[in-house]
Length: 274
Figure 1 (cartoon, rainbow, N blue to C red):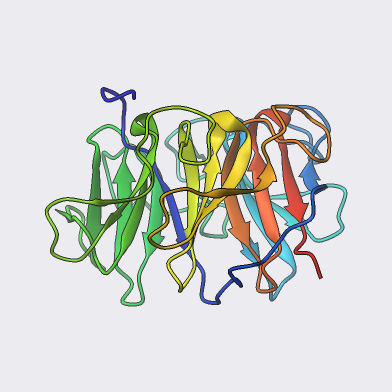
Figure 2: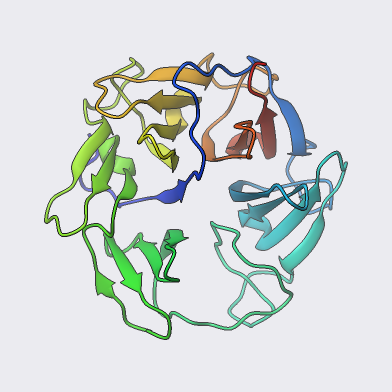
């Protein structure tokens, strides 16, 4: 394990259950990027996070090394910059080292200062939960707060403990987390994770995690001691059945999977088997 490393997380949740016996197709379809790295409107450069908007049939991508948020309509061959894209910086029209796309607009307002944010989510009350890479903590910010408080929970916060090769759940009021995936050291067996990235949890408590260095997406049912590979796991590569450092994931309302394929500079769509 890499115990001296930072806490890392991309945390998300699903409002609908995914059937325990669900299976996904083996080959993915590139729905954004895939044209090599660069700053063209048909390219991505080390993308990190994404958000799937079913209603508008659109995905929003944190195009990290281009310091921009890009909108891709379903079926489009190129995207549109909706935030940033003006170089790295701290101006209200600029972005720097972004990881999660959550908001539209060409300029923004700073609401939280002096953080190294690598993951965030919001609860039904509008409280923002921020994973601070530098401080190894999850902090909650209620509306209007600029300081926030360190929390070990909040009705089920799931954190990818990147350097410890595990996913943790922090239950409300707890002082210690519960391991829900991994924690067997770095490896490629079904009981192992290797630098996990994005996490999505459905209402049944099933954990879906981007197993970054193993180039696969894994699924861990609640209480399970090992997971199963649902996408990838064939070694790193750029073919339609392979991933190369998958780092983010999301599902649409039909349980189709979207994967941020970091080193391939693309987003892959893997449909649920009918």
